[in-house]
Image (cartoon, rainbow, N blue to C red; front, side):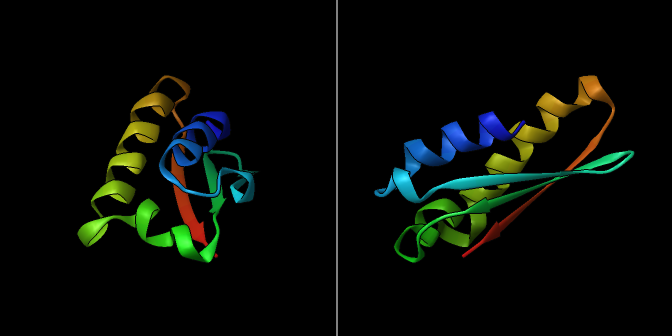
Length: 76
């Protein structure tokens, strides 16, 4: 899952070198921490959070085969 989030995030931002993804795996859930440059926060979140919501929807759809709950946290 982390590779998918990282690929999409690097495609959206101006500074792809500053994108980092950290995965924290639990028994039934997976937390993905997405860290981007402060200048790129708006590009990842989007107007009214539309891009962030779309990113979460894509990851949830990809995670259904593993029967895991995926949470994406966007941090600075």
